[in-house]
Picture 1: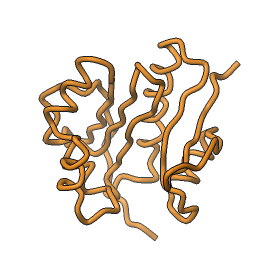
Picture 2: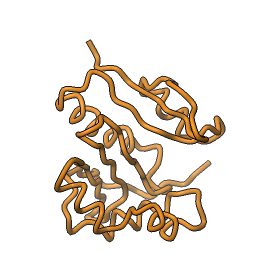
Picture 3: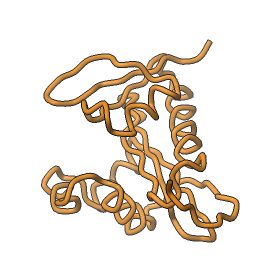
Picture 4: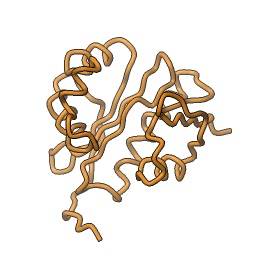
Length: 155
């Protein structure tokens, strides 16, 4: 059983361009890839590119506990994609990821999408798949080694 730190009330706010160091530190710390930052850079995902996305098409939220960034999520308002979500392991299981995901979902639905989507790993043993399913996401397709999931606007 994981031991969770004593937690103050988490606060949620929109990601600012000045939050990139925190966003990338959380992403690399939570990713199951040993080449985290290096691979993100190879894919063109850098602090500069994410700042540009936030300016053009994306929007995201950051969770802080005692002024410490512990999680974030971002969506793409141009495509309806729930683009990324990450919560530090010590803060998992406390509702932070659920709240971050709901903020992105609400924003994407408010952009006019009747259906939103995401990609995740095909590996059923990873927690992400169960997390998304529990929150109403369904498998859509499998392509190029990825699982695509979608969620329809609630009635």
